[in-house]
Amino acid sequence: MKRLSYMACLLLASAAFTACDEDFKDWADPQSNPQEEAITAMVDITPVASMKLEEQPGDSVVIASVSSIAENFSLTACNIELVAEGQILNLPSKVKDGNIKVRLTELDQKVASLYKSQKSLEREVTLKLTPVVMTTNGEATSLTEYPEMQSAITPVATPAVDTEYYIVGDLNSWQMDKSTATKLEVDKDNQYLFSVVVESEEKFDFKIVPGSAIEAPDAWQRALGASKVIEDPDPGLLAFRDKEGADPDNLTCAGGKKMKITINVEDYTYTIKEDLPEHMYINGSPYSLGWDWAVAPEMVPVTQTPGMFWSIQYYTAGDQIKFAPVRKWEGDFGYDEEILSPEAIDFAELTSSGGNIGIGKSGWYLVIVAVTTEGKTISFRLPEVYLLGGVINNSWNCDETTLFRIPTDKTSDFISPAATVTGMARISTTAVDGTNLLDAFLIYSRCNPLSSSSPSLFPGIKSFVSFTNCDANGRKIIVWNTLNAVSAFATKRFALSAPPRTEIASTI
Image (cartoon, rainbow, N blue to C red; front, side):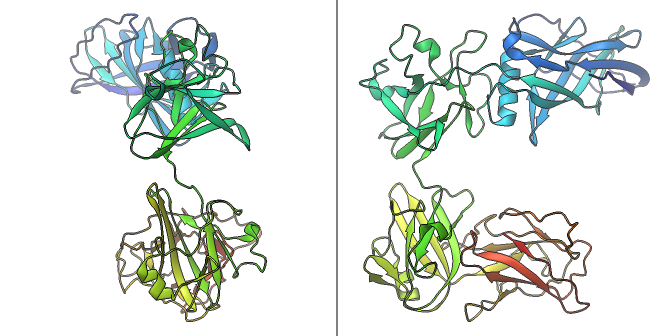
């Protein structure tokens, strides 16, 4: 690893620092004091090029060391931030004899948190340091904007993958007994995923125990649970006995609803959430003569609202449709007056057609399916689509001034009002209750003609269309429906007043 040097203009202040010790159970932030007078100093810090945490013998490791420092100066503390995968995590440290040391278990779990995986693979991390130096007369300062450093950290090896896993806890009075424990079932498409749906009127604590350990003398030492070291990210880290010999905490599941507990024993992560579908598909006569689930369009999940999905579709009178959380005849549902709102039935003139939803009136519809642990609802309403981002009179409001014109037939376009301001644009629609489906309907494109050398446009629904460096006056966004597309919409072109520009195509 290349040694990095830093020349700084130091601002002096009086400060007092306590002596460092080897107790890595209590980590304190370094002290700092108001800055006063300037002086020049140099300090060289060299990070560890690579480190396998499994091979480290103690409860702490040296992550970087002072290579050299100007006369009459000493390194007394160092704030560390770990950076990877677009995230930043603070890492407490202590300085002793020119070495910057961190707690092994905390480093291990924070690297795992950055990568959302505890696989024992070499992980590249960036170290953002803020060293604190002190003169011999007790004056100190923090060196901000110190050069970033790179290091490769390999997390501690995870336990061997078992073929069975069980829940042991409040549900079975914490008995290590296969006959009373709740077994997680392996996913048929992924051997590393195990899950189970549980019902409990009250909150309960539990741990996960491998099948090979549940009736063994060391069962509790091999149990899996929640991390004690850092706050669990989403999905959480599935903790196991660490190198300090500490067992994990209990996991906790909220009661009162059907909850799905899932563990990933490749990455050693877990999720606990309501047992709600993650996907929703529409099948029916508009999509294929044989009701082929392979071509059934997928609805768009509503951001931050699990179990809720939407799609904008054109239906012709006489069309029939059904819904399902998977692309097959499993868990499918259609016409049911208990889940179809009276407003939806009247608006689309819906009828039951052999259990399917029969469409009685041709037109464009915003279809919304919401699934909770209490049941389902299906809504049909007019698709209100808005151009937001301030490109229309600096307005971010969903109102008539930002509303797209809805076409009168299946093949015509949705057309936005003319943009009046250069800037970022976003397309949004609204749910039945009038709230925005945030991030549900976004597009991205470029304001110059596409060519074979142009970078590919961002797919998906969480991007933007930019009018930056474009003449926005008079611009309109035109979108058209693609019935078998995931989102049901795609950017077709920009309709311009003058001068004309090359059409820009993108899918969402």
